[in-house]
Length: 498
Image 1 (spheres, helix red, strand yellow):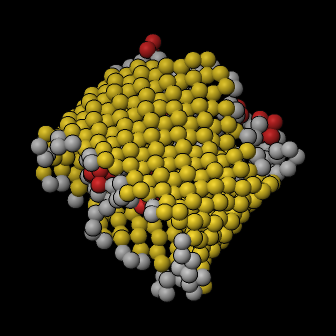
Image 2 (cartoon, rainbow, N blue to C red):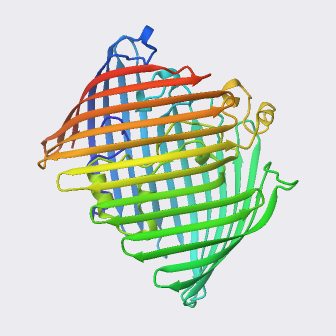
Image 3 (cartoon, rainbow, N blue to C red):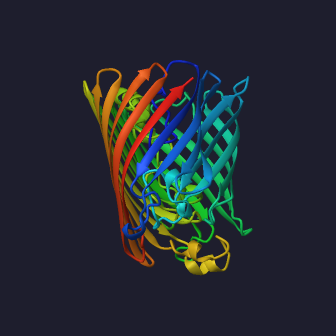
């Protein structure tokens, strides 16, 4: 409950109920040795109080699927006369209208983040010192139309409009528009298949500037054996202001494979040669008894806010080939996994054009009375728009110091883990640790955050849970970064569902 504000504790996302509505409220008190997360010379102790009503809803019918979790996090800090509210929201839905031709999909999010990636960080951005906490908000609506050309092919066309806003002076994309069309071979083709995809993006910034990006792709594949599909790709891409060898566009080949040797293992890989380099994606999902493994490596040039936040969705690592994963489902029920879209590590770079290379590994294990979940990640992000472009207002706007400080090469890596010891069916002891490190080269600076939390929770009644715990956190820095603090804390919380 503490440090994972947007998760929905104890709710199985694979529950069979077609409709679910869970309102509740969480209240907590944290006594800390460093309430402002300040350097040791000026640190002071204090108490942080939180009262957060929340609502979780889920629907899963043949025509409508969706889920949403909204938490209104309200804080009061001792020694300060004011209070503040920081909402957390994750919502996504899809509805197919009668006739199964027209549909509407969408998603929305709102959460706290640290706009200065080399400033003071904490295990929970919403409780951080307020001079380095801001809100990120996003809303996307996607109407679509779909159908089929008999047994020859299935087709789908969609338009997506995404609105993005931040309370900080981080000049992100304000609107993103995407138009996409796809045609996929139908059941007339046995043993092999093909697809055609074309999409166009337009990214608009608050400076009034817009960036365009277009891509088309033709794919053909052959089923080489049970559970194995291999194929080739031909792609054409054009990206404004990403110029290589005098061109901002080009055509290149690629190859891919999907291998599902059993109901417990899925391996996927793809490689594409583009005019600016290459893109690659490799993922592995494996299940052995009570143990599960998820792995993903990706290299690509990313635009929009997807490049700004290093977010982590555990489900994406355990969904290879659409396989059922009961170990993952149990870890969700036992509160060992954070909710969708929680940032792995700090870092808003820019969202114009970012070359990303990201590796994530997740391990889960569930025994008779013990469970364990570990995740490790490493991300290398290279901003392709330099400070000269920024200062002119071409892409990101004002060219202030906060806009240009993160231009360049950034490394973000970390390790998190939680061990749970269940004491019967009502109580458990949890030990959680986190190590995250962020490094930037212009100018050189590094921040490192380490935290360790030990807690005990128990179910007091069917709809009431209590939690107590202790926490130790240390942040240190090098180079131009000056974010240094240490903290000891004791906390308690109550959660009621109605």
